[in-house]
Amino acid sequence: MKCEAVKPLVAGYLDNELSESQAAPVRQHLLDCAGCRNEMQSQTAQKSWFVPTEPIAVPDGFATRVSRRAFAGDKGLLVPAPRQEVQRGEARILQFVIQMTAVAAVVLLILALGMKFNAHPEGSELRADSSDLREALEVMERLNREEQFQLPQDNPPGASQPEATQPVGSGVGK
Ligand SMILES: [Zn+2]
Image (cartoon, rainbow, N blue to C red):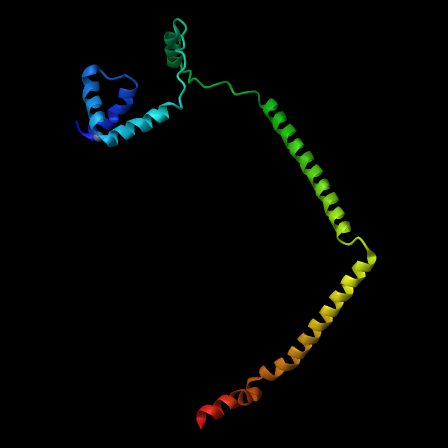
């Protein structure tokens, strides 16, 4: 028996749905072929996810009633559940979410304020920090101003180009 012929039969073999004459060659192939044996084991593992249930007793005349209703045009659709109750439940969940969001926002605000006051507990420290900051800003401003004075010299192409190229030109040209 070939693998292609065995594989479709493995599920039936595991469920004991094959006749003995069908099952015997499958069993023999599974003993010989590691690939199909792996296939069978993976299917066995899948089967273990499904818990077998007790067979359910069908009431007397069930099939007759189903077929009669089907021929009468019953499509077997469930009667839609009362809409209002669902909406009321959704509204309640939404209300809860909004309330929790508001509570979380208040908590965050309190935490943020608490952290702000903890970060600068004393006025003297705050002043020292700000004077350092001002000094740093002044230094940066001065540096910026110096750069700005230098920049215009580079910017006009006609005036500054000879000056800039002179050292390079004098070295290479001669
Ligand atoms: Zn095989």
